[in-house]
Image (cartoon, rainbow, N blue to C red; front, side, top):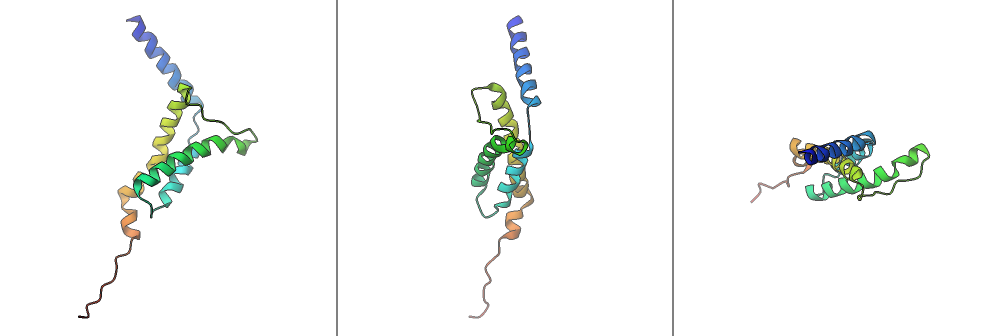
Amino acid sequence: MTETLELYGLLSDLVEAALNGLNLWPALLAGVIAALLIWLPVAARLLIALCLTLVFSSLWPLLYGLPPLAPDFGEPEYSIQFALMALVAIGPVWLTEALGVRRLTQRKPRTSCIS
């Protein structure tokens, strides 16, 4: 029983540490940029959103005069942060698909009635 409590305590500490250092602006920016690429398939836009999230979150400290961050997925806190950032980055792409923006922007070919 105590092992289970220790495991839950460790997990809650990891989640708390991940949420303390979480910055969602790079993920939101990446999601909006990927959502604007309407002519690409959904899977491509999702991959672009995830890749841009990694790039922007690494380069975001440059705005404050700090050195860029290298992603370290060996740290559990960073893995939890990236999972949350991925959900935020994927949101705008799914929203544009749900609203049908792609269908509205595609033109139908005009056909002639002349036989």
